[in-house]
Image 1 (tube, helix red, strand yellow):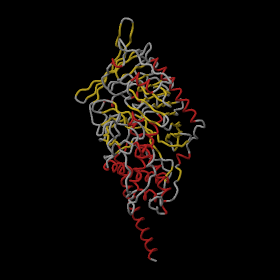
Image 2 (cartoon, rainbow, N blue to C red):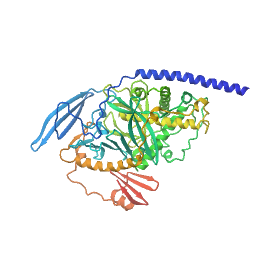
Image 3 (cartoon, helix red, strand yellow):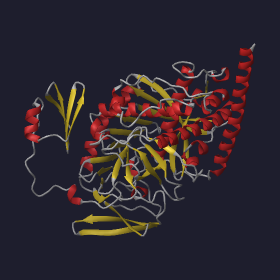
Image 4 (cartoon, one colour):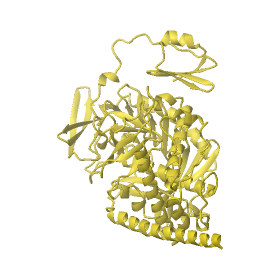
Length: 590
């Protein structure tokens, strides 16, 4: 009888907690929704593969375009001149100058415009200090870093954008004529996305392919501040009982054995990430799930790209994630659980999910101290000096404040990073809105995976048992039910895209060096032209051949800056070269 009475009291406590939780959750959602300003109208979609825009004042033919950016007391002045070059010199035929006042959030170099006529990829934004842009007569463009290495390629003919990461990886994004996208990144999941209509709104279904596995994600297509964002929309929702259990603290802290102590990624990132010894709430468990999944993905990607140490390692171990930073992530996780609870109620009533509330539009305007966990490598620009640096999976960034009304980027402070080529801790970086949305998407997607695992493992491995109301299986959202089917040969299409990207880079490199091409410093900062121009006299190049031994390579190249031991492979990293050995012999040179 005492046991029965105890169970009744426990049930009553859980019911009371859930009721109080949802009152606060709904109040939070209503407050943040009201605080979000109406978005600016989005631009008309450019046609896939379009080389550039059309002038509003009649046709103008140019063979050279120059963009010069100067700053004075926080103001940015961009002057674009269209010129025609002949045998007798260069004549300026038109010019346009715009001045943007400096402001917090987007005031750094990356807030300025990119290559004229390019509406997709990184070339639509300004490059970092020292970068150099070359534009071909057909609208294709190439950006090189200050050291002359390729950074970004825009292929106007194919509708393809290619980015070379600081760490040596490469990602490829191509838009097809039907506005579907193919995205490939070495060592990471690639996807094919297709647009479709539901309830009068446009959505995208991304079918991901990775290591023989396929899965789907869904996104609300949302116009925000003159750009289009893909806002994550859950493909399923749980009941209120589960969200309440996942939102509130547990009765007592519990231990949990993750099982990744022997995983290679954990050995590599052990100095950076340590799981909580006890979990007082599901949000803390989900925080460790989010960070551990991010770091495992980072390790796999860097090993696949044979750039593990160059991407994330420093000469000294990275500073560990502080308890304060992890708590900020846990607070953000709770906000996302609350948001999804509100969305689930709207979905149950067959209402459309408001992308203004679900996207960065709310985050950038609600006045809260939001943080983001990176889910892939983002090459960013230091807002103070225009220099390029990277953040990778598991790095934590905090919003530095709301961006100005005319900003195209947001300023974030790096709260935790892993050293090497990564942005320094406490550095302020400018992040484009589309990159910021992808960071939020990663957090929501990974937390959703964690919620699924949390429900499946409740009552096991030390986790508390959930009340019966929290064990109800999730319900598939209508947007997932009405989505188009995935491509039957998607994995093969992505593999073909990677090969096509090799051809694209060669063709664009030739086109941007040929007749009618122009070459200018990127608006991101001053460029050292000598760094990309061939010197008058060059030293005899060193020759490395397949089959050479490690000793032969060190005799020719000297000691490497880093040595990566990747199981059957060993990689010697030099300043401008990576040499892969198998069984002590050169197998590949990059």
